[in-house]
Amino acid sequence: MLEIEHLTKKYGAKAAVNDLTLSLGAGRLAALLGPNGSGKTTLMKMIAGLATPTAGSIRVDGEPVGRSTKAHVAYMPTEGYFYNYMTALDAGRYYRDFFRDFNMDSYLAALERESLNPKDKIRTMSSGMVAKVKLALTFARGSKLVMLDEPLNGIDIVARERTLEAIQQNRGEGRTMIVSSHLVDELETMIDDAIFIKDGALVLAGEAKALREKHGMSIVDMYMKIYGEGATLDA
Image (cartoon, rainbow, N blue to C red; front, side, top):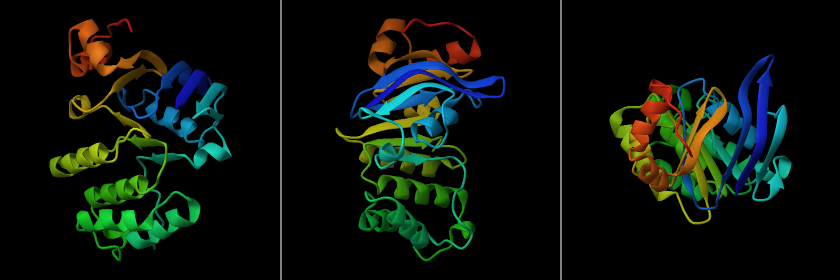
């Protein structure tokens, strides 16, 4: 589903992503792990076609990233992207106009499950409520590749549980999902693959179960070794 080869993104002399090579199969749920500033967001934006690589290539379902792949990739950024006038319903209409795979009925049903009023303005909502709107919008698309950038940040423990439930409910055989986070313990039990990046470079990636067996430790412990102790672990 996703093939990345020798991907680099530089801002001036600084490489936000540095010679990164990675592949993910269809139907996988992968955690993209690393502390803030490790290059997770830049990588996701390039996959989504929102940032242009300095070097290297990205293919989604066999196609180079570009206009055609945007129709198959749903990306939920960390930052807000709603106009001040928008209600939750307006946001749905906005997505419906831009994305052919957007299902308004699914979106409205998700809002109802979360007790969100479609007529409420998004700018008046709490951060947790806005996070629910963003998730509902993203999962209402029928995309083959879904990327969630730090979906657990800035929300309370109840909202986190609901977010994790939504991720579980919306995964499937035909959908590849990448969730970036530094809250590793929240994702440990549900992921198929773990991807660790540091200073823009890939340091470790593979099937989560195989990594645990090889290194004799949890994904959380690997995270602590790589980022806390600066240790190098073999793939």
